[in-house]
Length: 270
Image (cartoon, rainbow, N blue to C red; front, side):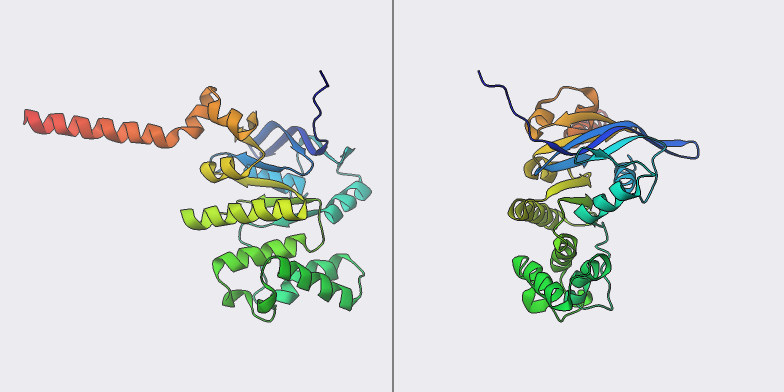
């Protein structure tokens, strides 16, 4: 029998610690992100998911632990490795972080203007191609406020991928959206992740959508990754912490049903 092959890891996190005063947010978190995959980190609100991304992006410095990108450690003093990571990675913010005073085309062009020495003509061509692929080309002269919420999300993604990154980090991309729009955003991420071939790391608490769209999922709880595996493995896991997170809706239903039965019995006795 041939040995099972595994895709190489683009990003690895080992024993990551981060505390703010007396509050330990990350307590030895580990995570592996295979190249070309869509990996989602799940967890309750306040579990430290966004802090994990901020440590990756060097917005926050971890207190201990190791982050490796494409096999090379991203040490705090290794400016060359960090510069290489920034060049090959992009970040899609929870709020989209679009500039209202810039047009759609100008928003997309900004990272190329700031991080490359490409001539203006090539920057424009690359931006128009990104907008074309995300079906926004006809809106290039509009401003973000003139776009729908879904179009703004696509614009933010166009800006994130115009530099042709190998890794895109998504921070709660569906925060504050209704179920239909959550579905649309996850469908968009999955579609373009496969179309453009980048590796995607998403942090969210939207369980149903994440299990459908992801190649692998991890669950962050009390600062540690208490589960890491495929969506099917997550759905069948009997670990208590996984069950508590995964089956919370069913538990709520049982609680409400018991309350209603108790109220009915009291009504009959009175």
